[in-house]
Length: 192
Image (cartoon, rainbow, N blue to C red; front, side):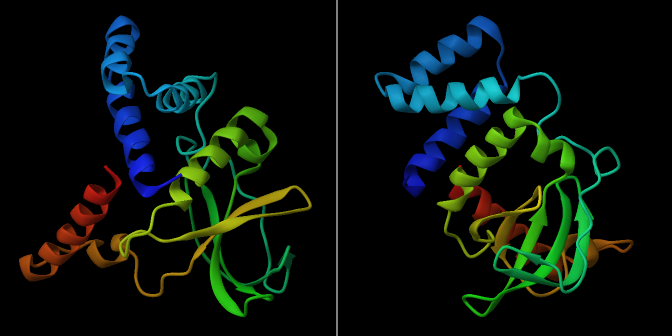
């Protein structure tokens, strides 16, 4: 799937999610026109997002703890070298790709996501969409890793502080905030 196609799918999906029932169907008719593959892709994502239970992005960190990995443990070709943090999608680890000799980030999926076939299919579809994005402000997805019922997204490791760390507990001066806002806007513009 090309970058333009991903942008089309994400744009139509975002607008469709803001509508329900007949207005949604009318919007899809207008937005997709004769592009049947686009319509099918968007409808599949809509169906997965409306399935019973929250989606993997909706699961709060306290509701579904990710399996703990330890330093030295392997997940396929990736050797865990440290824990970076945790969030709604699970825990994030620094790891070494033993085949390509590079450091990566592993986002380990919560057990509830990895065990639910519908939510896992949604995760894999969204990972495929994100994998084609190539922008300096969006971390690259290198692939998926799985071992012993642990599933993870393998991503580019971006060194440095997080946005949350940079803005935590203090006002951000305008000369620092503007470049951050510009980078965010450029990434969002690229996607949509």
